[in-house]
Structures are given as C-alpha cells and as structure tokens.
Amino acid sequence: MHIERRQFGRRTTSLHGWIKIQGRPQIACHVRNLSVGGALIELDVPDWLPYRFRLVIEATRFETDCEIRHKGSTSVGVMFVESRDTRAGSGVITDKDLWGGLERPVL
Image 1 (cartoon, rainbow, N blue to C red):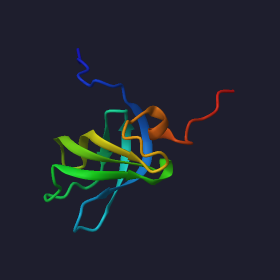
Image 2: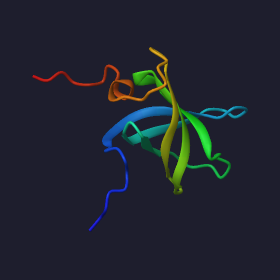
Image 3: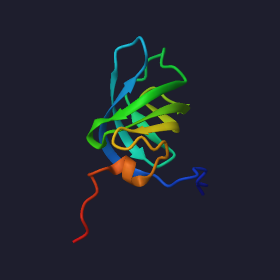
C-alpha cells in the first residue's frame, strides 16, 4: 500500500512552463502535476540543474522559486519555497494563483 507523504494533494496537469536560472538560458518543461506546495516537472534534466531555481507557468502568470525534492533523468519533483504571483504579489500560494483563469466553470 502506498502512503501519501505530501502535505498538499496534487492535480494532474499538462502545463507548459519555463525553468529560469540566472546566467543560463531558460529551459522549457511540462508541469505534470501541481499543488499549492509543489509540482512534478518533466524535462530532460541537465546534470547542472541547481537545487534551487525559478519555475514560470505563463498560462496562469504564476512563478515561484522551487527546491528539488527528488530528481530522475526525465523529471524533478519540487517544493515551492517562495511565490510571486505577477497579478497580486501576495507571497502566499493559493489554488487561484496556480490555476488563474484555467479553472473550468461549473455547468
């Protein structure tokens, strides 16, 4: 039996994102699952990827600093350590920050 260790539940996604690291070209990635506490990001993980970097999801105008919690050859699991919502700048991550405008209306 699998025991869930995450503090926050994650939603399955398929969002295009960018990893930004000062002094390096930005890296395209796909955010495969997302919560208010972290994400799973798919990409060809370079050997030089630092422990901490900035994740930008342009579709929702969300960006945050991340720390790697686990790393494979094609994905990294990250924890969000600071948030800057380009719309509000509150510093607190909420579902609205993550999904800003992508939520489907309930019919």
